[in-house]
Length: 514
Image (cartoon, rainbow, N blue to C red; front, side, top):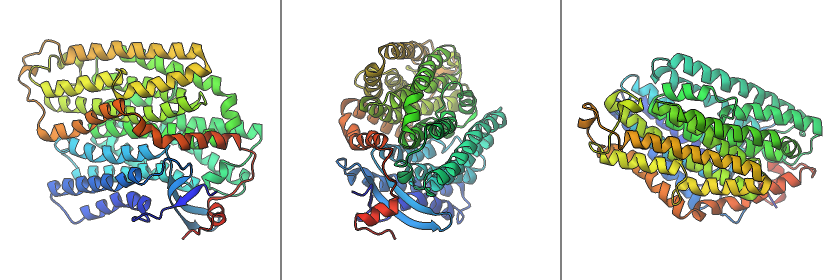
């Protein structure tokens, strides 16, 4: 049976359309000089992108383990690089998360960005193209092109539209991630020669590599992806980047870019070097638990709202890597759901910080107290996102963390108990923050702040709905993952089989690539 299914829906090149549409929006901006018109072009392009991504879920066949909506075409003959796209249950929700948050971020930046508006909107749309491309690519070179290109617009978002120390934060972000990308490039080249002279990700995941080669590839992958997650001790660029980035940059950084590292572990580390991944599991689990506790502990000490949320991201992403490397279905599905949940909840928290910063021009908890009286709608949204982040039953994060802890308990009871402490610490720093920001004593400055208008509510309400939708009906979001996760473990167990290519698989199934 083929491992990729060509797209035969009413939109035969849907993934290509999703990748190229933001670029088309950038081209359309060239015909407008008015900043308001440019904002509208960017928003409606991103909104159309989201609407076009919805059929991915509607037409997705959860009972299939193969890549769906596939597109394969020759790109470069020598070496053989193909334009190969496809999605499965692992990448489906990450694409939808990307296309949902981009228009929300554009609306959130409507009044916040006052200089170089055209360039800002171009950076947002180009970044959307690269993020969608990363989650769709089935050729390693194509994946690397999107992966590397994504650094440029994020660097510009931080370095051009960031805070007072934006240059330092942008360069630190760029150097950390560039170093990881350089190692990933080396891995791409080595895999080409060791894996049968192909860049086909599906083929490389079914090849067999010696133990030494697997170990070398695993740590190369680890360096590239751990920086992006970021895992302890590669996390030091994240707080600086979040503090200096504009609101839209912080939301995209936390909600989507961090997930690329975890996605890389699932797409490359586990299926391509399964033996090494299992051999070094104790190290990864230890680093994950350290990240959970360390991130929560550092969040306790923060007076800046953005820094508090940034360190909470280190802690929450520790749960993601923990779930991935316990090597069971509960853990991996919990990690995937937690990636989606973290994007929704932390994105909402950063939006809340951005909204109050526009009013008070301060991110300090001490300067933003007692907001429930002048801003009840804002306080309600903040409390919902905070309760979701600490894993309150009935909210989205509870399901993801519960599955991760169940999977971890099956692997190691000790690690599961230690990881649970991270949830307790999260309750402490989040409730401490909520008590002061929402229910503290308002100052003369905050007592007269205007509440959220309809446009600002429009950025938060979709995320609030998802918090409860996933929390109450998690199986709607888990069902598309089941077969893909099972296929992942099947691929890890079949590592020594012969190595077909995506095009060969298509031919064997009686299908031809364009």
